[in-house]
Length: 396
Image 1 (cartoon, rainbow, N blue to C red):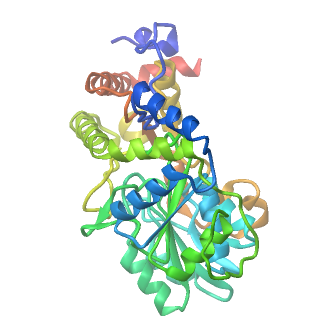
Image 2 (image 1 turned 135 degrees about the vertical axis):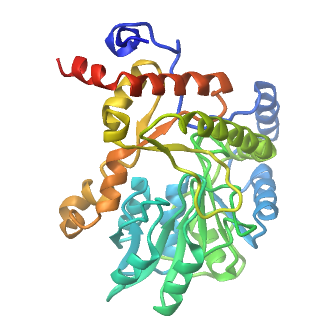
């Protein structure tokens, strides 16, 4: 393939329609129609309806936890949790995560303390967490990425030793297991996302898992929607109820989870097979789990080895209608408002900066086929083989 064969230089794109990078697992139209017809027949659309209650029960059984609190989205779940846990002052968290993780703290009047990550796992580094614990720190927020998980036991040990709490943003980790235990059973609580980019897809939505009765009572009251019979003191409510339509979609996603997880695993191993033949593209394997949902395909781009940098590679792939994207760029410590409010972290997170500059997410999920993976990796190989000429042509 000469470089004139690349869409970036005028050729026809490899794919007629953009390949998405999200999971986009939707049930069949017939199943949606039947579910929505039932909702309209019952004329019960929100506020702890029958589908919502059914989802709560099925999720409790799936996770093996005492309490599941379904919410309108995961960001609201994180916001609610900060209040329900009674956090104050500062919370240690990674800067390599989606903005909502930190925004939930800002909403609750808390200050994030940004911690660097382990470059091998992309997760918050427990050893660096220890060095950040000081006056005013009330909790650690771990973030589980790419179908992997933090070192929960190490973070729990740090938290216990310092008399603080630990909880998890587990938006990417639905159905994953660590040591045979479902993610959802660690820390004081964990928050999951049912956004369409994730493997359980309610178009939007999420849930909070906890084994703490007192915490669950507070969360039900904050949501709000028929809280516990006993009075609970709360600071404010969040109006974070999940609709019946969301619950219907999430129930179908839960029914399809095992098949969708298996499809992700198949696609992941295909990528793994092809990418090992391409110098400079290093596949991120889910870390810290005994079972992964494989919902994200992430590579690190070594510019010297591959022949071009991450940003030019993304530009080349997008021209081919391959929706590659950079991740968590530029890092929360360099993003507004934190870059101005908390300038002390700007030059202190070298591994986070490295991941933000080199990581790329490639398409995975329902709308990606095995032949698609082969074509994507073929384009990546040709990009590597023609990198010098591509760089020269692009610079003109």
